[in-house]
Picture (cartoon, rainbow, N blue to C red):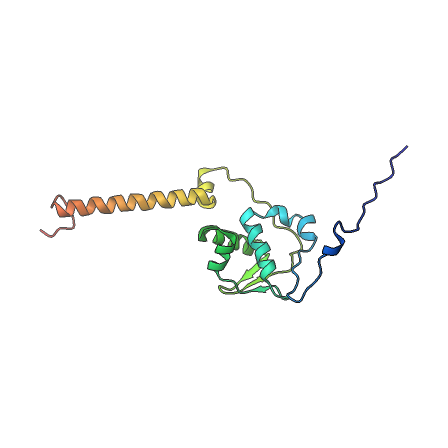
Amino acid sequence: MATPPRRIHRAPLVADRVRSIGKQGFAFVPNRFLLDGFFAALEADELRLYLLLLLAADRKGMSFYGHETLCGLLQVPLDRYVRARNGLVDKDLIAFDGVRFQVLELPAEPPAALPPLRTAEQLELDDPATVRLVAEQSLRDAAHQHSRSRVCAEVGGGDEHEER
């Protein structure tokens, strides 16, 4: 004999604390955000920024917080904020004009999951940690080369730019 389905009780757990739309407004996230895979498609920083922009937005989804405020509230450095913002723009969840944000209606389909990075070239182009490592190494190499050139010029040793 089959077990009857368990009945879900929908009464609130704390009846005197039921949420309501107040004078300051009320942010919402459509159920599709979770059920259709949008939640799973976002990186952690993207998800946090998206939630913050939802909370800050007016009725039309507009928000005017600057990057310093957003970085402070999210407690992330500028590079992580920029990556998260650009990820949300690429995933068609927000629009950004350089000053204002608009949280957009969810697109018909969630963003496709990115394929894994497999080659050194893919990592150098698309992995933020590898990109940063390569950039830092390039800067160190350039600074080292510059300081070697200055030492050679100061001691008069073989500076090819020296006029004869």
